[in-house]
Length: 140
Image (cartoon, rainbow, N blue to C red; front, side):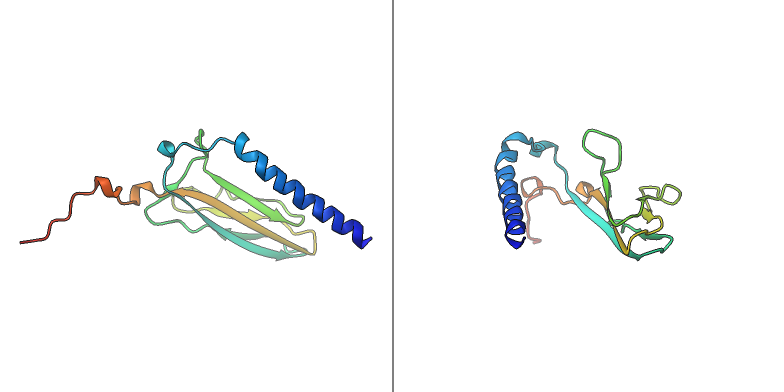
């Protein structure tokens, strides 16, 4: 049985490697001219079986605003969870400008975990490129 498990792992690794070779030709990258200075902020937590709820607050980044998912007006965010629980951003307390809270319901498996991620656009707080900065002139 051990040999079969090793063969499955090998097939998965090889398949992933082949997929990685194929994807770059098929996926389109965002043009550099449309790119902005984005970074991610997230919060995570774990829960034990029968814990009724869990939540965390995604830290807001100074000088940044929540980015929109490219081509939409929706906040660029994601939720990942492990275990039998339901998770989402809490619409009652999340305003996407000053507070972003993720919440999960009851954990029905021995353990549950959650991760709430939000992309922020920080281009307004970035200094201009070197070519656009005024020349440095020493004071007389």
